Image 1 (tube, helix red, strand yellow):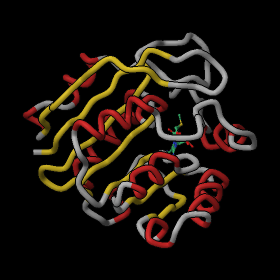
Image 2: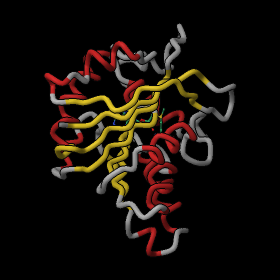
Image 3: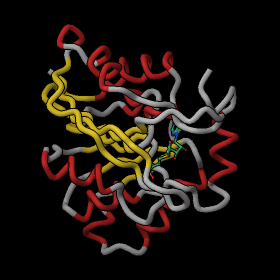
Image 4: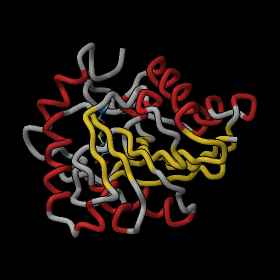
Length: 205
Ligand SMILES: C[S@@+](CC[C@H](N)C(=O)[O-])C[C@H]1O[C@@H](n2cnc3c(N)ncnc32)[C@H](O)[C@@H]1O
């Protein structure tokens, strides 16, 4: 079972009643840096988009972005932010309440999938299911961008540690993946010092 228990939606619903710790008022800098170095292709899917800052950042750069999260209030907040954007940016954004474990249910092929803190809230089994489904949602040559904790906190309701070894075991050439980059990074928080993180850019072959 994931560290968020048998009903993670209840936990995330509760935490979005206030500003969550990961809502730092913009995209995680380590994710922005990765996307600058490995430019994404459209359309982009933001899995577990929260209140939408990464998707909005990408739309401001001219990208077409679908953001999905299972928390209604997070998506409502993202949509409020869209309302304040110029129409040429707003029209590039589509936020939906959806289960990010199965991106293929959106019935779209994406050029890129960005994951800023989603995989690390999944347990091992959920991660396997998500990655199998991700392969269906990305078109050939499409890229998956990941930022996840690289530190384990021995308490519930915290993300799990994701390692380079795990990524190399999951994203193999035999499974149709090519790892472009794995790097050390930081995950910023509103309420605590930065957490050691792992960033990756992985291509669908
Ligand atoms: C650590 S937060 C990161 C949020 C956002 N990407 C950011 O960087 O601010 C993880 C997000 O994943 C969402 N989430 C967790 N499980 C989900 C699921 N099965 N389907 C959709 N969203 C999910 C949570 O609601 C939360 O917004």
